[in-house]
Length: 147
Image 1 (cartoon, rainbow, N blue to C red):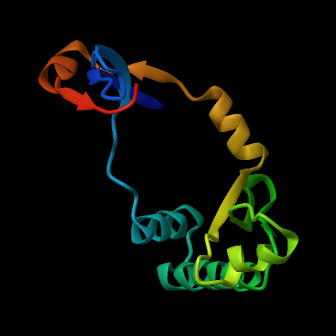
Image 2 (cartoon, rainbow, N blue to C red):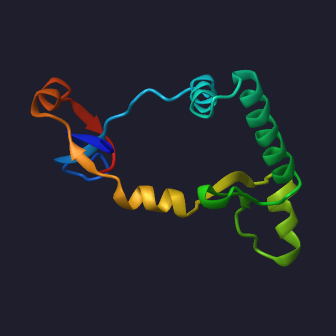
């Protein structure tokens, strides 16, 4: 099925005339929980759910451990995770440290995901379709923000 969208009216508040326009808004679905995922993996491989949970927990524990000490972690064709940070620019070379550790630090730490071949293939083949007209009319509402 892929991704679905509905049409929504948008008010461009950053423009003086505040024109109304339209855009595609992605429909959201409930997240698959960790427990659901572990259960499905266990059933698909015919192994004990507790054993599967222990293996997944250990994998995640090691992934976090390596990223905590600055390493990126590759999970084969799934992709790789890499800890990164961004900071503001400084006026001088000597002020750079203050942007990281000083009282005005602007450091933002993130984990970046780089999709591997398996995800890239899925993204290339994923469809994006409009929701049915009945759903579109039922959910019609004004969305405010930048278009």
